[in-house]
Image (cartoon, rainbow over all chains, first blue to last red; front, side, top):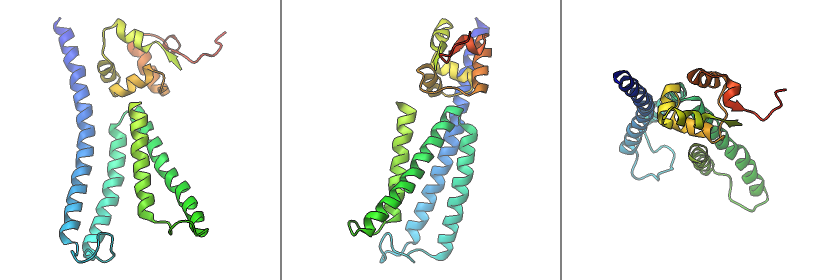
Length: 144
Length: 67
């Protein structure tokens, strides 16, 4: 009976530890994003538009870019380390969907633009579409 | 790929979360394998087989002719 209880506690502890490792990585990435966003918002020129160039100091732009690349690079690697193989497959498929949205979306938009049917391709819209595509793909593969 | 994971788990009265913890994978991974939505890698298939004291072929069936 006691042995069964110990085994019972052991698997529950391992499940909690596993979830905690994932939460730590996701939480750290969220915190980095939150601080970066706050700093950009704090130092942004109020007169300039949200998407205007030269609206934040160069030092903040360089720092934010470095933090972003390092955080996403390290965070993605760390997340892959703490994920199980099923989650890794989902992450890979999700990334493929996001990439395909860009790879298919841009040439399609470009050729339509060449025909004078739509405005010039906008990187921000394509980026947003790839993010939305990856979120939908993640939800589909994870919870279907 | 068909498998007997759900039956084997039920025989031991384990939840998907408990089996997942014993295999060091998530509950969703166990559910995906049980419902045939995800085929485990060879290393995970071996871990599953060892956990239940069986061979991989006794748990997983790819529908092929073994004769």
